[in-house]
Length: 158
Image (cartoon, rainbow, N blue to C red; front, side):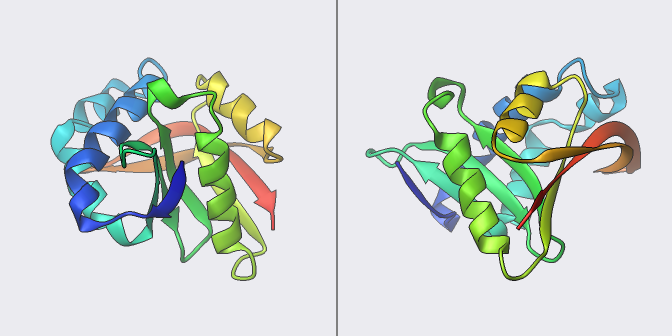
């Protein structure tokens, strides 16, 4: 596995990977209005929007097996997604470490939001030294405004 910056040529593969992982972690845990707004076109548009701050994990055949989208301006991990076939193989940990390395020296802490029902993700972050600082409401953007989503804010001192 190699972790590298995403490239323009990765775009057709980024959005399906991101969408599948997002649905897996969010279905049944976020408002139905947000689920309806997260169709394939949302992920395609946002994969392109965030291309410059996305790192990917690729296997020896350059198959994308994970991605992490970074909010460089405020130290946010916007999204971490790992292909279902690659879970448990260190992909998520490698991507998270790459994000922490990128933020270190630029931010005192990194942060991310996790929906309460995504217990697998919450355990993963806690195992990697992130701490839950409590609930907040995340304003998830949609084409027509925002949707309030209850989340927990996780942070890691850098």
